[in-house]
Length: 389
Image 1 (tube, rainbow, N blue to C red):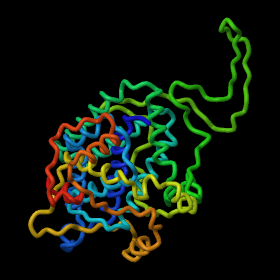
Image 2 (image 1 turned 45 degrees about the vertical axis):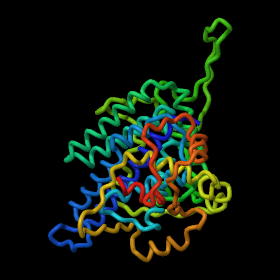
Image 3 (image 1 turned 135 degrees about the horizontal axis):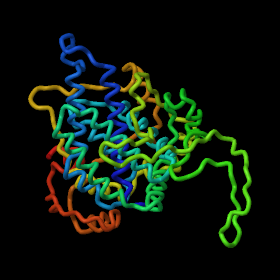
Image 4 (image 1 turned 45 degrees about the horizontal axis):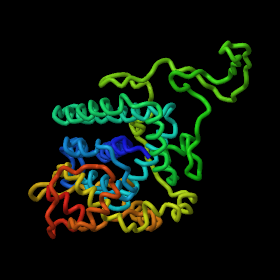
C-alpha cells in the first residue's frame, strides 16, 4: 500500500463531485429575476462552487493531506465528502448524497482502470484541477489556492519512479475493487456491462514510450537482433503522438479526468447484483470496526484545516436533488441495501492514552503538530467538531 495515494484519491474524487454538482445546479438554474426564494440561480451556483472549492483547497487542509499516510476506510472518506458537499448553502439528503458518491467513485475507478501508464494517474489529477480552475475564473484568490496545490503535487509526485506510481495505482484499484455500481452514462456508451463491471478497450493509443503490439523481435546472446515475427493482436492500436505535460498550463493529451457531464444528459445509478452479493465481502468499509471511531477522530483533526462556511442570518440552505423527481429520490432511499448506506458516526473527542495508542497504530508515522483538543461536549460529533471552526 502506498502512503502517497490519499491526496490523489481525494482530489480526483473531489473533482468528479464538482463536475456532478455543477451539472445539476446548471440543470436546475432559474433566471434570477424569475426565481423564487427557494430556487437556484446562476449566482447561487457560482457561490456553491466557490465555497466548496475554497474549502477543498484550504491551505492547512492540503498541507495535512499531502503528508505520507495510509488510505482511510471507505466510510471515513465518505464522511469527508459529506462534509465538503455541505460547505456552502447547498443541502443534500441521504439518497442524493449516496447517488453523488456512487457517481464519483465509479467515474474515478473507470479512469484508473483505463490510464495507459501508472504515471498517468497524475495527468488525470491535473485534468481535474484544470477543470476546477474553469469553475472559479472570477475568483483569483481561490485560483491561487488551486495553483499552489498544483505546485505542491508537481514537487512531490514529479520525481517518483514508475514503480512508485504502479504501487499508487494498485492501492487505488484495491480501494475500488468491490464497487460495481451501474451508471447510465457508462451503460449507454457501452463501456460498462450490466453487472457493473467495466469493458476494457482493445484499441486506441498505446502508452507513451511503447510500441504498437504485433511484432516479436528475437536476439542472440550478443544482443543482436536475428529474427522478427509478426502476429495478429486483434485490436486497433495506434502510437502515442506525444507525452502529456505536467506543466501548469500544459497539454495533458490524456482525456481521462475531463468533465464527462459537459453535455447535459441524465445520469442514473443502480446497484448491480454483484455489488449486492459482494456486500458481505466489504466489511472493512461498511461493518462496525472497533477502531473506526479512532480513525474518524484523526479525520476530524485533519479536517481542522477546513474552513466551513455556514449560512449567516436567516438565509436558508438550498436543497439540491440529484434525481429527476422527489419521488425517485424517496424510492432510491428505500431500495438501497442497508449495508451499503453511509450514516454519520458519532465520535468521542477525548484524548486518553489508550485512544492515542490506537490512533497511532492506525496512522503509523504521521506526525500531528496541532495541540490535543480538550474534551468538550461540542466535540462528541464529528460534524459538530468541524462546525466549531
